[in-house]
Image (cartoon, rainbow, N blue to C red; front, top):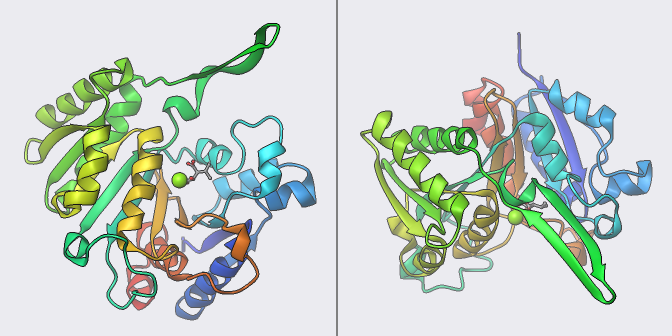
Length: 316
Ligand code: IPM
Ligand code: MG
């Protein structure tokens, strides 16, 4: 059966601008695509009272791909409950446990060059693999309450079971097989128990299955420095949800203009959520000045990985 069902979630801020450019390109190249558009994130709070409706989530589960603009309306800041809203709910619902973010300079995209010296970023060609449905983003308990008069306490829980680490490590190693066969796994093993387990499991997956891949481990802090000093030495960077959130934004700065990078959130099947990096950037929403290249690249990635249409990917 032809895979052509794409759910479009423009979301907040500049989301609808970038998504409409991407749909335009995809539609020209692949007129068979069937788009269904739903409100999402802060925009959905305005229209439906919640950031993600059960109906929308159900349609996404049955889709071939999801094209997401931006999740981050100001409405989300005051929404209750705060957990698993918008993107997080979507990831959990769709089982998208991996976020893949390629970081590579694009010829011709120089409107806002990298803040780093050109020679430090010229050869950067790396992929960040971030675990997306575990760790401190989802762990329980999480709460905030008053312990005594004037003294509140908030708790978040960072947890990682073996199976979750194995799954994401396998994905990173498979990706590295198609590339330069180097994986750097980033953790904070000197301090965190979850990182010590992470390191053991990643090592075990490499030594038992992916012996042709060169694996090294690096601490969060030194990998944050290495991204600024020596990013071209990375091929695949594998890390947990929270560290990946930070390092992937740091890495996208290497390339320069916000909006030119894309990412895919995937699970075990072919269904993927494709989205650009910039976020909703509400200050410039509506001005039609945001660069939609990242979303268009996401729309080019989508037919290859989710729709069995590699030719459409090449055309875009
Ligand atoms: C991202 C975003 C999200 C995250 C937000 C929108 C919840 O920053 O996709 O990287 O923190 O994971
Ligand atoms: Mg982020």
